[in-house]
Image 1: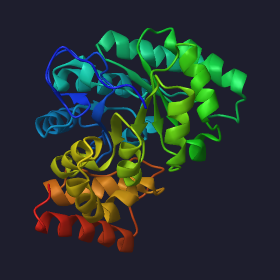
Image 2 (image 1 turned 135 degrees about the vertical axis):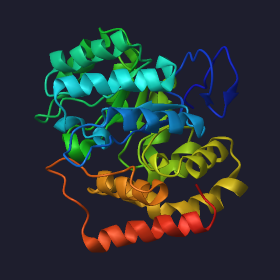
Image 3 (image 1 turned 30 degrees about the horizontal axis):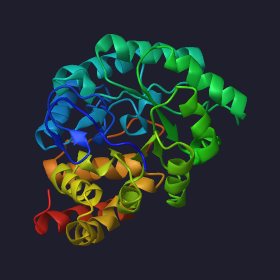
Image 4 (image 1 turned 90 degrees about the vertical axis):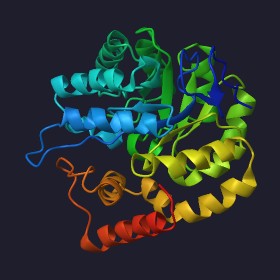
Length: 316
């Protein structure tokens, strides 16, 4: 099984809630949405409030500048300021795992260096995503970014990148010392067991909300999460119960949340999670930048209805 967390302070589940975190990629790490004003400029004050609210709700940390943060649409200055804002708002840089993916390995390393300068505790990195890179290119890419000095969490999303970080390749990257964990997004829960066999020291992180329970049972020690942006309390409670093996609590809660969690694996996941935020907090989700367009009226009604139902049931 993947290794468990060690820390100098009190730990809840597999993530540490306060103080120094020796494995800061553990626990509920929320892939944060990014609020835009009506003119689509970045609202850093609202973003800081959002980060603080997630920490206050019991989440272990945040992952800014990922796909949910629409990093591909940001200017360099915006992307840098998002990281700095997240570190300041979190109150402890170890709680922040910026996404550092970029077209070029040198650029990705530069973003990792920005994260280190800001005081972040780790970074999240996709494989090369401009072409179908072979294994040698993938290994060189991760080695280059690892030279920035922060722990690197690999992000396996072959649907978008056309590069599959197979269990065998992950084992090579871990053996080389270039990654400490993997965000596993394929939805193939069988991989958890093969990763544990091939790379027993590599930490498995849940990468899609709708396989949370399955990967938690298989030994995941963290969750890079989407819907805690809207429902941090109930999502965090689900994660804690699942990793603790408390299936009496986790299974019925998972069943209630799953119709909404499934939207995290859809193409429109950013828009859906922002709509869910709008329902919970009266507009904190807001618009997306192009090329993302609003949900269709039917899809928006579905997401709103699912969120309102959960709120009516007392979930938060």
